[in-house]
Length: 142
Image (tube, rainbow, N blue to C red):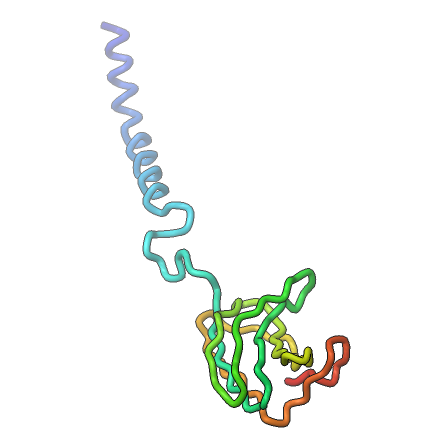
């Protein structure tokens, strides 16, 4: 009878601790690793959308590359002469360099810039835009 009384008293005294641990475990399980299910931005990449107005006589490939090396160039679309097109989304929240390249190999490069998440930006390339051969800096624009 002495042992049974000891276990009864121990279980009764530890009930608040057991309830507290159970509540903490339930809270952790419902939060998950990335916050509550359905939270804003869950499973979404940080992207921005760009439309290019090409007022030149050149068919242009539009690309970007990260401003900080290393980083590969990624072509996101093509815009026909004197046309407007929305290209594939580009990364948001990190500096990138946008490029427009003609079939002849000339480039128009913008200075590095960052876009906000879900930003929408229009790049207007004027008819008199100066394209340069890669390695020259004459084609940079703001």
